Structures are given as C-alpha cells and as structure tokens.
Length: 220
Image 1 (spheres, rainbow, N blue to C red):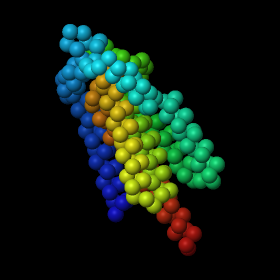
Image 2: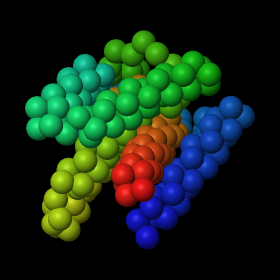
Image 3: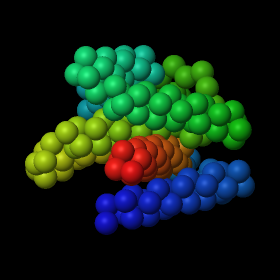
C-alpha cells in the first residue's frame, strides 16, 4: 500500500513541476507572481515588506534553514551519525539522495535560466537563476529524506507523523520566506516544493527496491 502511495505522490509532483515549468517558459505566471510579490510590500515604499518590524529579520533567519551551508552541514552531521551507528547503507542512501537532488536542481536552474524577480527590491543576496527555488527544493528533499530515515527507525505512528509534519512545516516556512524576501517568484517556490518531494519519493522507492532485491537474493 505504502509504495503505491509513494509512486502516486512522485508522479503527481513530477507532473506538477513540469506543468509549472511549461507555464513559466510561456511567461504565463508573471502577472500572478508579480501581484503576490507586490501584495506583500508597502505600496508607498516597495522596499518595505508588510508586517511588524521584526518579521523581515525573522524571515531572513528562517530562510537560512534552506541555505546550502546549513543544509550540507546538517547532512554531514547526520551521515556521520549513521556511519557511527553502523548504518552505512542508510548513510549512503541519505548522501546519494541529497547530492543527486542538488545536482538536478542546479541543472534545472541553468536549463530554465529564469531571471530573479524585478518588481520589488530583493531583501537577500542571490547569485543564481530563479527557477526552481533551490531553497524550496533542498529543504523539501532534505527534511523529507531525514524524516523518512527517522520513520524507518521507529514503530511509533505518532513519532512518524510528528517528524513528517516538522519536515513539511520547515519546507513550507522556508519557501514562503523566499517569496516574502522578494528573491523568488511564488511559482519558483511551488516548483521547488514539487521537485523536492518528487526526488525524496524517488529516492525512497529506489532504496525500497534495493532492499527488496537484497532480501530476495539472500533468501535465494
């Protein structure tokens, strides 16, 4: 039952990503994206986001959860822990899943080469293309992958629900912070969420297939 749900989720996320990518290529989302970015700013001063004075700083701190330095440091710590716990296979799964996902995300950025938003001043330093959002992609991929690892180590349904809820909450928060800071179009973030979830699902399916193959081989 679970593999079928994961396959369905993977297919839905992949279709969503490529649909958004097609629409972005046709510039269909620009008016919608621009309207959302403008709605989050003071009409009298577009450099000022709406909300209390502490919100922009909070958004900048939240967005750091999806930055590459913190992401790769977190992955390094988790992989090191798994190796120390003699779970080398799980450590390899985590490392390959995340590194391959990063490579795909980076490649797609170069392929689409979408410019960053220009309708409002950007409140964070950026150097790469806009589509898909690397922060949204990597936080979704990394935190869902780590949630899957934790879920595989416990039989408690409550713990499993909790870790996946936390992973989703972090991913959504980071993605929203990118839009609030004006460094991504909303469609960039939606595509990043879809891509990250799809890659996490694909990695899980690959790991499950490998475990099944090894079990059959051992049994034979």
